[in-house]
Image (tube, rainbow, N blue to C red):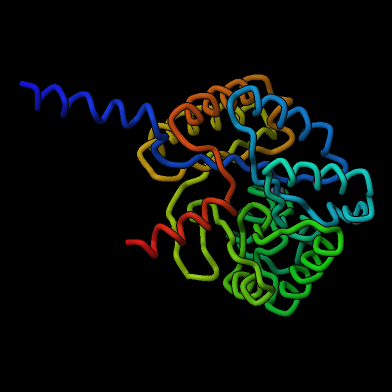
Length: 270
Ligand SMILES: [Zn+2]
């Protein structure tokens, strides 16, 4: 009897004491032009229980000017880094020029799916390496310590992944995996992400993510990815905040940087 009660009761106690699993909230497309939206996003996330995020910063968003040249933007990022947020390199221009001879797959992925933003979708090794190292050096020069590289829309060619590793990036992510570029470990975890470009996409996004949220809840790592435009869409933002509250109650909110370093320790111990 006593044993039965203990067996039933102890797991609940353990669950209440220590969160099971991790939650990484990432904010994509951070640049001087999106900063006002990102600030509102971070305020709402904090109220919902998430104080640290991975901030995917674009070095020269759509050729509008280098992010590191904006001194107030950089000091804002440094402050966020000091508060525990992580700065991640997110593409270089976040833009891919259209090409003449594109097949259906290329057209779908680069035009319909990402609106010509899939910069690293088919970049050759040399160009990918040049852009990532340029971003790395610019960020280092601005005293920002980025160790991760994420391609726009997660579309990263195999050559691009190799270039990121050679450019001393420690990890990258795709829509369904987190890849440790130092150890080669690949953690499967499907990202929750919204599209807000049209009414039907928003509606589809809400249904898809509600279902996906139930599916990913059993995994070790939950990834919630936010774009600056999400906060302008009432229903999308309500769902994002609801999911943030739900996951942050039972999981440890962290960044990719910290999650990966903990993973390396855990894997060594196993
Ligand atoms: Zn992006």
